[in-house]
Amino acid sequence: MRPAKNRFTEILVEANRIGAATFKCWAFCPGMQFNSPHKWWGDHGQRDFPHEGVDFCLYEDRTGQLHRLDENTRIPVLADGVVRAMFKDYLGQAVIIEHEYAQSENGTYLSIYAHTQPREGLRPGATVRAGDIIATIADTRSSKAKILPHLHLSLGYPSPGLVYENFVWNIMRDPERVSLMDPLDVIEGTWQALDLPPTACLER
Image (cartoon, rainbow, N blue to C red; front, side, top):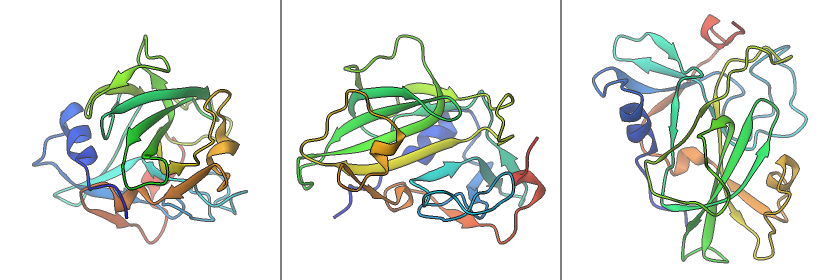
């Protein structure tokens, strides 16, 4: 059983003053969704591993126009929890937050916010509430991959013996330590998959 649906999309829209009358739905290029084997940047070839989460980069407004998130986008926490780890990832930093969830094996689940610039003073052990701003999206202009700024969000159940010290990306994709789930099963709101990579999905 999945955690209850949450208001992550609504809170992000409000926090970034997008306006509920403007935002219609998330839009995903091929490769942005959970478990995709494909890249949505560069040569659009195969990933080394299936995608561990969802990449939030684009949304559609009510006129059908696509918009990009950028490095000023404020990232809210999707539920009450405790920061357990922070580490450098490929494009910025990742923040791992543990949330109570009585129906999981050890009573918790994780949300992992990657490719971010954490807010000043955020440290492991900090208690956060749903909607608290923990970071902004990392500036990717100096990235060798020439990938657009985006929030990578992963959700999963930690194994009972998971140790958060020295947590890195490979731990997240190890099913013996984290059992991943599709974030779109937990996040309220609508989305659409784009058939072909439009200009909005390509490098700056």
